[in-house]
Amino acid sequence: MLNVGKIEEGFVLDHIKAGRSLSIYHYLGLDRLDCPVAIIKNARSDVMGKKDILKVECSIDALDLDVLAFLDHDITVNVIKNGEIVEKKTLPLPKEIRGVIHCSNPRCITSVERGLPHIFYLADEEKGTYRCRYCDERFHETDASVKY
Amino acid sequence: MRHLLSPEDFTVQELDQLFDLAADIESNMGRYAHVCDGRILATCFYEPSTRTRLSFESAMHRLGGSVLGFADASNSSASKGESVADTIRVVSCYSDICAIRHPKEGAAAVAAQFSRIPVINAGDGGHQHPTQTLTDLLTIRSLKGRLSELSIGLCGDLKFGRTVHSLIHAMSRYANIRFYFISPPELRVPDYITDKLREMNIPFEEVIRLEDVLGDLDLLYMTRVQKERFFNEEDYIRLKDFYILDEEKMRLAREDMQILHPLPRVNEISVELDKDPRAAYFRQVQYGVYVRMALIMTLLSLKAE
Ligand SMILES: [Zn+2]
Image 1 (tube, each protein chain N blue to C red):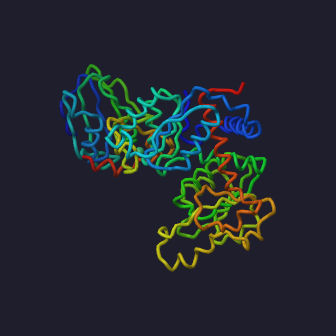
Image 2: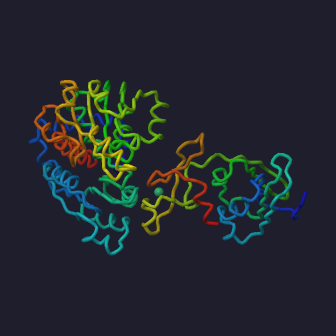
């Protein structure tokens, strides 16, 4: 297995669907953080065939990972401290997603009102459905991937 | 502080209280003539809807309050590009309660988010129009004496009709409701609604011809079928008379069936029916004022002396 240095403190996000690591990178706002990030694409996986991995070296409270479960339910989060995995996290779906995804409904007030945060609420926990807080339009993955 | 953005913002019990108050207003109008003395309602209408606006204004005046506002976006600061958030912040300084109508979905929710006063959604695009739904519920409760144990026919454009969707949703909260959806195949109720009804075990039937079910109904909610909604002229010509209610069809209906319509009506209810005691659509307008009076009082936490 390819290894990109050891992390003292931070996260290893494993089992990312192959090809999705860059969008996860953007969703988490890693482009705005001044910390070392390793993006490993198409790593071999017994279970998935191919997978992506993100290694992020940062203080463990610097990242809000709540949104991850929404982006990809299969991602596993390893929390690293002093070079060791201290926790393997499975994340519940966040009740609310703020400022990460955008409402694509052209009739929605968010399309014209300046400075309004895009907020989605978890409408169906079982199906993982999110709806716009303002117009109740359902969020479709395909609408967001256009951005990157 | 409370707002009304969608009919579900009120529980069934809260709706009962609201309708009890509206019923008392109906029978004791005089008791309520000064409840809102010194209070101001702002009507912020970013798109014209004279009927809804006048209903709100009438309600506030009948409570002794006064009204200010604008009737369409062209002569307001909105036309200069002011955001809904800024407008409601300003309006909060001028008034005690605000009814807002806006062509964009979710506009009232934005207003509520930035408001210092209660906000009533008076229609936000194709999304919600809760005071119409409250009007419909109060009308049904007043004329039938109950909101449960009813067979309700909804006829016309059931695909695009926001009013119809809200009413189905609202009536689904009451016991032993049966729906009859009467529409051309092109304008059927959307699947997400029928799926939900199945999930909730609420019986419904979809038919094309009004005559097939008219005799089974306690209530008939008529809506307009617009020509542009049809895929082709042929279907329109073939089907259009199915959705026009006239004296002949009404012979099939029960003696105590009530006809409702959100108005304005075009030709879907023949004018000859206006004198039929079962034609309830103008009484419905009156109930719209009572329910808005009750709503204003409730959101402002006011009681009659
Ligand atoms: Zn939206």
